[in-house]
Image (cartoon, rainbow, N blue to C red; front, side, top):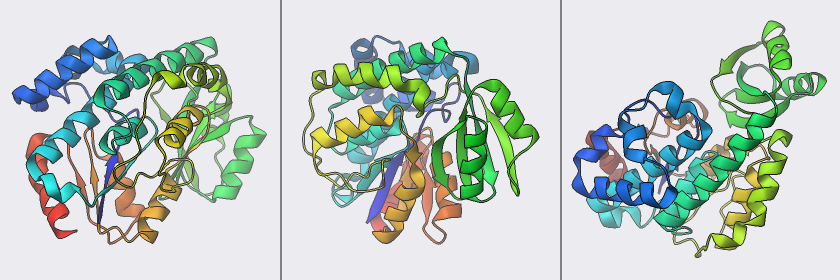
Length: 306
């Protein structure tokens, strides 16, 4: 079995959707999602610069839309080969995974992510915060150091990477004096996502949760909560809401992939991050990054072999 994965915020690049829009059906899908989500996904995915698409309210819908286009292209090209796959998403990628699993339809997925993005952007604007990647070191030492600086671990990404979140002065102090054996890389994001700084966004999203109808998953879908497979659409939606101010545990997802003995990993556009983590954290398991339609052939070979 193969697992198809969907990346999170920060993976977007200027113009990354342009190759997909050469296909008329993909363009029609993006036009529909743009209208549904109230955002010009075609313009932002083809013309907008890096600063514009870094905006949370733009980045998150763009990434989910890319996941929808990738999944639709995989389904159109390979059909039955997808019957046995599992899916998972990293952070906002969990919403694209919900589409691939049949929990959300495309319109619901884009409405959900547009609401989530708006609420998280509003929370991020209340207090200046940021995020930094910590590479290497010992996890227990890192978590202890973050606590001493009033920072929070936002992402446990596995493969020796944890993402810290909090106020700029504390992040600067972490970079100046990192935990033993670790290095700190500031990330270009505009908020302390998946931490207590997103509590208001989480509460507001919970208040409208029932506005987003769900169905039972039609294939295994892993959750960032603990890597487990979720079989209830309602429970998966609840985890999506709670995820706004809870840490992302991609480390536990990769552990679950290994325990399930998945024979390969495909990462949907905009790809690279999760395939890279898999190469370090799931050694020996082949991974394919699908960034442009030409990459679908390699994904199809992996789906055939796995």
